[in-house]
Length: 393
Image 1 (tube, helix red, strand yellow):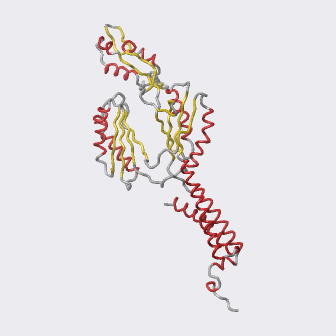
Image 2: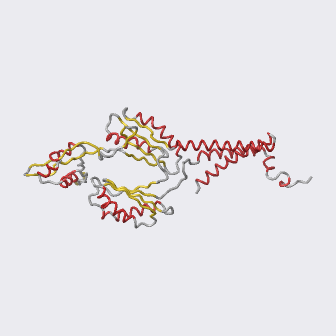
Image 3: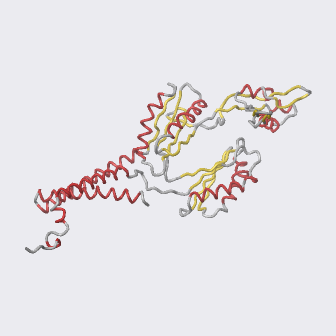
């Protein structure tokens, strides 16, 4: 008996037809691999694009927008303009704050851009005001990845300064620990501070100036090293905190002497507990609130991250005072979920139409079963290859 080659007796399909058990196991393996690949696929509204963008923020309390522009923003811009790979630079100067946004070429690695920005900031240090409280701070931003969720924290009984402190130390830290959360930023907050309102007539009558008062406050509110006491067998480090914490401590601060009598800050100014910036605020549903913007980590599944945040909110709310409420203002996953559901529906509809057309041509139900199973199986198996290609770029 002559054995015909496989090509003349059914082609490559004969191998699978003659081994139904192995073929079934292979189909199950492809199905499982496709399901695992589907669950591992990243979900996002837009393709992953990592724009090399860095934002530089400089705070100079008490400075007007004009002073910020000439004394802070302009020197920094001159240094940043000399960097290679810089594509676009924009700045915004307001009262007490300067924000410079730097966008680099897509071919420039972000780590290299960070090094150039740090070098430019170091070069501009001597050109900035000497009494600048803190040096400029830079952070990486991605304009193509907006916050996945925006939350609002309100309270009907607590002042916003206490709410700000609670959100920053408790709520934001808990949310930052959730898997997939990359950054939590606060806006509209009012950090607690002691506000000093000078009496111009009083300081003029005593021969003082506002700069004298500022220097006295700054010099008396520094937590510096006190030294140590060395003995024959041990050494003791001296530790004392000179920083003032309350408005009453500031009122008792001696800023000068006149005729041997001390002049205290409370004699020439009104000192009260308040907010660091009383002109800053945010409102949600006609209530003053602290707004939290939650951004995901690069490559994290946006839907699972949002679900984890929503699952934590009830537990987080129970740990807060009853007057504090946490509400969701916006959730970017709503549109993404709708898009995913629509894609799944259209995919199932396409498979059904393909099977229907095959049946119309074959007019045989048993003959339609094989391609009816092969079409969705091939699509599901492709998901695993798709997942492999994404994570191995």
